[in-house]
Image (cartoon, rainbow over all chains, first blue to last red; front, top):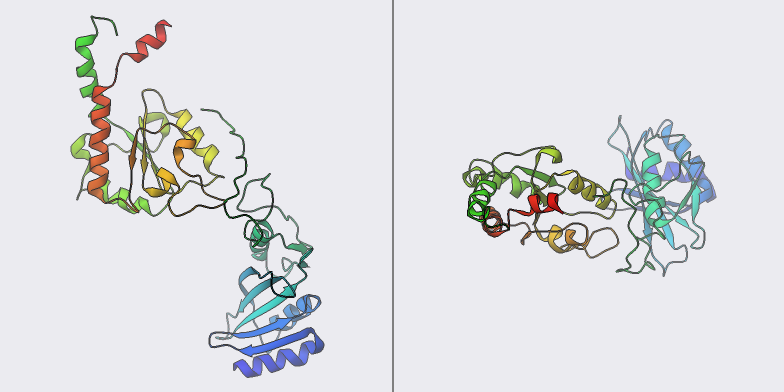
Length: 161
Length: 156
């Protein structure tokens, strides 16, 4: 499916949930409201789009932007060469968005990673714990306001030397 | 050291320095250089350190190869604690020595904040020749050290 057809089709399906669309050189990019995410996912998984793979899920922190955090999703398809990037700008104070674990089980760890490093909450996630950092770590280190050289206490030894 | 054991110190040191059983604690890209140094082309075995033991219980030389994260720190301390005396530690590569380029929230700034280190091998990654040089320096250190401390420990 052509980039233009894909974007136009999704614009029609989502109506005012779409904030913007662009045909970037690599992937078509769609910017949507957080409320429209679940509807978007339901749409892209069905015909004629059939984007049935969640390739990647990550986050950006730009303190100068109006919506400070942007969660970025990459979708792909097993059936067609189509790909799609979806950007969801979130509110900076308590960033939260719906979880995609009910659609793709692999979203669970990706969302845990974003929660761990950026502090974005995913509503409906079955087990939203830290993934990479140890329990007891304070703050979210990939946020721009996390001090670069801040050191935190290490987790205690389970077996001492 | 008591007078009767003193002549044997050099013999014990000679025996220990040429029978190093090493445990590679490999976490990162330095592991490729470790493999290169350990395999036939550069051949650690020429210096009596050919036996790689993949259990810390059987090893007396811990080679920490690569970046150690804060979350991994308790694991490294446990591995060190599981080794039997006498034991030595080599910090292999810039990350193990000082944290290397990673001065951030996740990385331990040098494994000597966790466990005692005998020899530091710098480099990002170190060349195999540097590794051999570090091993030879460790052997010199073992040769010169007091081998009697186990008996002294038992008496006290």
